[in-house]
Length: 476
Image: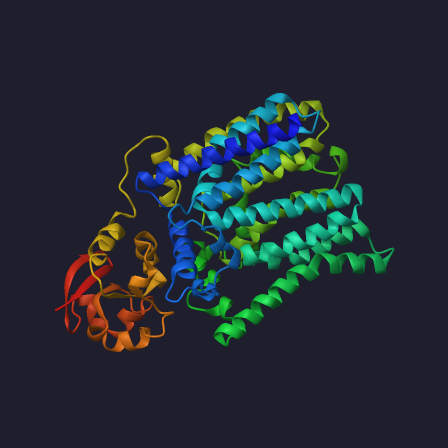
């Protein structure tokens, strides 16, 4: 009974802290674009005109939009899932008697205060869900390897299948897990190996086929989520132009991941030689292959050009280290790990100030008490203008989803998914009082149909606000 109560209290501590930090950041004017994007999709599904699940679109992983089930507080889902994962990891560590108390305390401190973890659970709801499923799936596979419980194998297959619904890139690693399966089972009993491989792969392939079917039913294109202009893959590539040197270059990708992750993940690499079964210093085996899964995932993303260097992604190394550190039996190694965890804690915050991701820099400054310029203030100013009208507003939310999310009233807008969007686009003065445009004809349908808006002109309208790449026009 005491253990159950302590686990519940631990979860509440994690969730309360994560929620409070997300709330304070939002009150300071900081909401990540990731949170705003999925909050808008949730709004369209719940309050759209009409409210339908397909309003959220069929391009991004479907479980991602569920993470922002409270659009007014989009960080809630990430805080909830992050608290569940952190509690699971601490319970797992707590049951390892040979792991020193200082190591357990440091892991607790890192999960509560480390920048990569805090940014992940409060500002990246879709990725924290993917990382949680990915970590849990590999933990189940490790237990199958060690205990040979078939139940764990079935649970791994289902959990890893769900990974596809949270992050498409998980499909690329499916052959890697077949290799792990081969290393566990061997080829002496080919029938057993084949059945095990099917258990591992069928759930993921089923979810993949189901998603193709839904894309075909609702859009007429079964692979729309792959080659849509707003595709998950194309969007990620758009944020990483400097990754051109590593894309499709295996050695360049390998060097980048190693150098970029080494300072924070030093404890991860240090533990690698001892990741074998029972912590023995052995060659590459099933346990070591499972331990390498996060490294392989990041390497694959870099190689495919789907990766944007950011500190929060390093938290995946922390999660896997928490799973495998209980296997290490050598006392000298267990004594060194706390020192490396301290390095990770300090370096995580230092790297945030130097991060190439501007959102990470601002979040770090907000959490540490510095005043920053709000990233959402320009969008909020637009919301303050258009929310005064009782008529409709024409807007393409491919780039301007932040406006809809901050407004919270999606019925106010005529968006590309609405039936009347085409008519409003051709004759906007007959349908709307305001038109909001992103000044890029390749990314905004309104700018594509009316190129003169880039110069501040739209027939029947006059500009009331031009703010960077965004213009607001009002009907004359």
